[in-house]
Structures are given as structure tokens and as C-alpha cells.
Length: 312
Image 1 (spheres, rainbow, N blue to C red):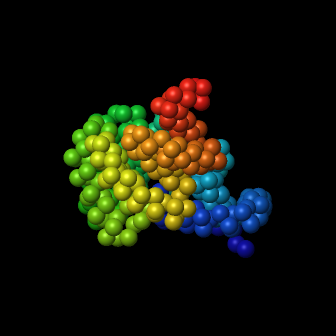
Image 2: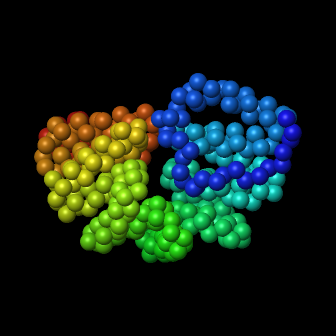
Image 3: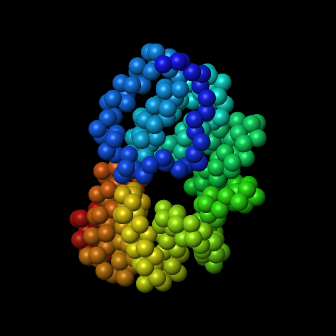
């Protein structure tokens, strides 16, 4: 085999997995050790193209299965390999993914640092598509820290590029996030308008995962306005897609919200069932933040039923 110099091999959108997680699990379960052995051999033989491809794949699977320690280690190694090989675009992709891993762990300061490092490279290279993705993620980081003005500014920068390039699928994602910003500020009419713009694209293009997220948020908007029947309908539409696609983490979030809908209507038995389904997933996936929120809600259910020992 001829040794090859490093080239950029990341042609897909930054936040689009190559395969759905349920389709990744089997080959990685059966051949994971072989992939690691192949990586070690590729490094020994200085087969740089193979090193990058294997490192990228192993890092992506680690991230998708929420093994954030391994994902961080592998993406940092990938960034170093790409930088040493002079592949600025590949280095920026790895930095962006490190930002995403940090964001998943709610390490927002680290996430912003990695995203800005990626963004500096892409702006220097004039890669607008990549820059738009990172503008979007910086908006999400700002939003998580409740800096809504900054979040909207980042999202609108991303949207200007996406709309100008006719990238409807990516635009739908940013419409959705602008809906989140409006919702967080309790501007429900504006939120619903953004969500429906996003949903129209997702449904027309058959983007199920995008539709599922937006159904969920439309449920949140209805719930905030105490339209509980509509909220449950939206949540169940979202849940049907998430369960079909094997999106356990997304399903856990929707189970949690269905628990809240049952709770506010004093259906404590149903609320507890939904919360227990949610917490089972959060605990198995090691999502302490999600589990913490659901433990809190289970405490409220027990308190409402005057079971104070269980509540405590």
C-alpha cells in the first residue's frame, strides 16, 4: 500500500452522522477491537489516510454513544494529526466536534473556545458552509447561557448564509433554534411561527429527525400556554419518530415532558410512569443532568401525594 499525505475527508455536514446510531451499534460491537487494532497498525506504518479515517470513525461513534472521554481524546488526536499534515479544514472539523462534545457535557466555556478556533480557520479559508454550521452552534452555546441577544445574532448570521445558498435543510435547523430563543423569552406566537417554518421544510423533505425535534418544541409551546391536549398530541408525534429511529436520549426528553403534562393535570400515576421511563434511559446513558431533572419531578409527584419520605 502506498503511503498518502493527509487530505480532508470530511465532506458531510458537520452535525450529520454517517449512519443512524442503531445501524452503527452492530458493526462497532462486532469489530470495535479490530478497528482499534487497525488504527494502531496504521499509525505504526504511517498510513496517514487510514489513521485519519479510523480516528474520525471511532471518535464519532464514541460521541454518539456518549462516551465523551474517549470522544475528546480521539478528536484531540485527530486535530493534531490534521494540523501536522497541513490540513486546516480537517483540523477545523475536529475542533468543531470537540466543541460539540464539550457542549453535550454543558462545558460551555470550552465549547465556545473550540468553536471559535474552528470558525477562525473557516473564515480564513472562506468556507461559508462550514462557518454557518459553527455560527449556529455558537448560537446554541449562547442560548444555553441565556444570552438570547447573542444567540439570535449568531443564528441570523448562520441563516443569512444558509438561505443565500438555498440550503433548506440547514435553514430549517436554524429556524427551529430561533423558535427556541423566542420560546425561552415567552414570545410564544413568534416561537410557533419559527417552528412551523422549520416543520414545513422537514415534512416536505422527509427529514424525520428534524420534524421530531420541532414536534417536541411545539408541544412545549402548547404546554406553556396550558393547552395540554395539543401538547400531548405534539409530544406523541415526536415520540413515535424517536422510538422508531432508536433515539433513546431524545425519547427520554419527550417521556419527561409527557410526565409533566400528566403531572399538571393531577394524573400522578401516569406522570410517574413517564418519568420512570425517562430516568431509566438517562441513568443508562450516564446523563446526570437529565436524570437530575427527572429525580426532581419524581419528588414533586411524591410530594403532591403526601408521600414526604419518598419526596425527600
